[in-house]
Image (tube, rainbow, N blue to C red; front, side):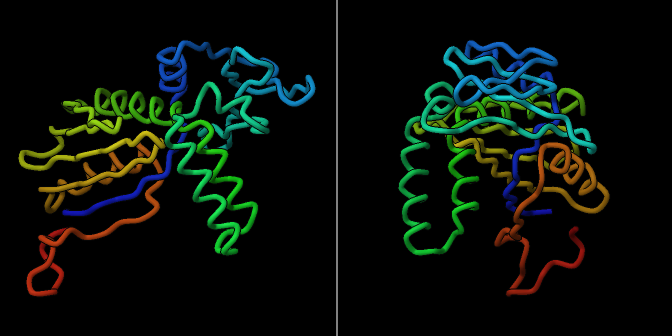
Length: 218
């Protein structure tokens, strides 16, 4: 199994949500009102309390994951939960995609909303990854790059296999699995599926011989 994967964040760990918030200096409370525009409030299963007049809520879904509920108007949320550089890049891309009509406004707005919590998403993904590795009895080492990207190398699922996960300042997950063959592929797949939703996958160059896919690998 030699692949690159693009993984969409899946909020499914209350402990990781709380840990990420705590690392940023904020508190998560249960069954409270989430604040928004002009004092409006809505009840949420979890609420990440922010210093200003707005909060970020999490509503539990039927599949056990949590959906974000928030009023992302202006900078009331992003002032506290966004990575400034990631937000600036997102705003540039937002304008380009809207002007070229490559994205609908709804798609572009959803993209911007994620950028407004990018710093929190990075902290959450790191906390969730560490929690998952411990639960599955895996070992990991971390390295923080100059641009703020955090790299995890996770081992223990198979004698030679390892999973390298990068979490960039925008909160995006990229996963590289290598050295997994045969039944050990199921361990790597289980790790990925628990970590998030696989958006894209791509075979690495060594997965091929003269352009032909290696049949013996999964």
